[in-house]
Length: 182
Length: 182
DNA sequence: CCTTCTTGTCTAAGATCCTAAACACCATGA
DNA sequence: TCATGGTGTTTAGGATCTTAGACAAGAAGG
Image (cartoon, rainbow over all chains, first blue to last red; front, side, top):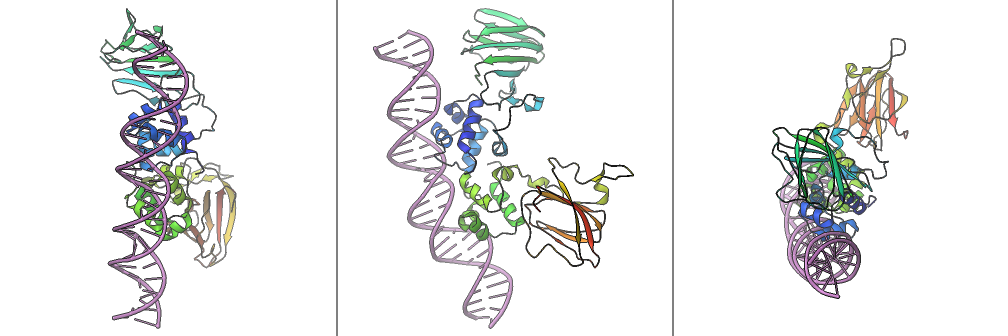
């Protein structure tokens, strides 16, 4: 093998902030297989590699075309952002391919009535954002606020938090968090 | 598998005019494996597919990127060339819409009956040209065309190709290829 | 009609991939 | 300190890929 499939897969998985188990769960394979592939202990079948890449998601063509030695890009068009969410809560990641990324910058879009879920979120790091369209209800700890265009937030992610679009219009937010949870 | 690896491999092999056994010999695998892959009876490992494609030759990236439904045009009428110059110095561009072009120019002249040889040529890169006098028979992959003055060609040099002057008059071509191999 | 060569397909057996489960390690929190 | 939950790694064994060889069909020539 002239191309290093293992290193390439590991690079992709880590830039997306996924553990072997999480990627395996999304792909419908076992975490052991991810480990073996990344160590080049096995050469995966095309169908297996396809399943793994579906969990990112990424096409086989993109996988084999990807140039890891290329200098990191400085500019990205809207189409270059990688979708990580779902139709209700769209999370589009900036510079997803960039290796060693220290910051996660997202272009979020909440459909009317959409929310991050029933459970409150809590994780390491800090996060902040600015609302650019619509209105969002943000709960942090015991505090609840409703933010509109131009308004912003900043809090420690350890505090239980939840986003909920209480308006009729879709709400867009540019947010950042560190360290990369995605 | 959303992409049809078997059909894709079979299409490539046949356009290169190779039997399963001949491709297997070049690739260092067995003919049975080629057969099974083409029927999608197995999903080859990446390393096996790499070996098979080395026999063509073709990279994994090219294999998965290749769009068989939208093969780039091989032949252009005189009207299909794009004028880039002026009345004094006319510069008419071939395949202007083709992405990722990188070319250098040649002035070829084929005597009556001359050809590039019995064997089909195949090498890396791309080549293109315009007939300016006489007539030339050009075979590219499975396609055969006879081009006269003002007509042009553009194809990937990996496709087996051959030039043959089938007229009584000498034939002149302005051609370009990349990288500057031949 | 026979050979003889080609083609692609099929099948047992060996090689490799893939899974399930356990392992060691580290961080966090009771 | 111990428990818990996270990480990546390893291994035995079942599943799949790959090989070696046989098979059938078709074409060319005697």
